[in-house]
Length: 143
View 1 (tube, rainbow, N blue to C red):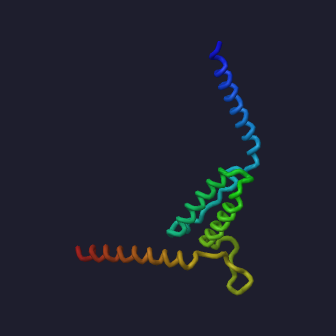
View 2: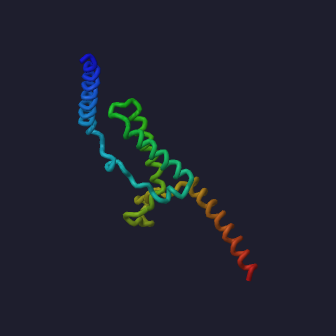
View 3: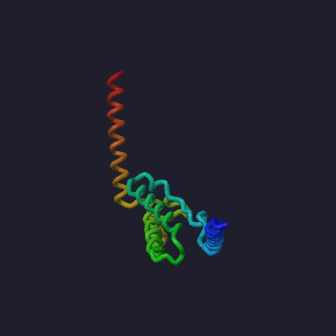
């Protein structure tokens, strides 16, 4: 019967842990569900290196935000970074929706790809065109 005291202690400790996690899960229900925070990343953003970096950083920040509590001291900073990255990714949004009228100055189209990323895309396409021209030249010599 001397060995039953440690067993009782371990059993009561395990019971407290189970009850504590159940209570913690009820308190933590105020967090938004992951489905509510999911945003679609523009496909054009994945065509450039900078866009890929932003998407990866956004994924990491969202994962970190999901693991933080509502009163975490770094939460406002992480939310601000997520908002800033979302604004940068909006530069890749296509101008769908309402058609723009070129004769009205008041209508502004949503921003397109920024200059830096557009230049990167042009350089990448130029390299592909050069490689294709070399292949065509080789094929034409074979005839």
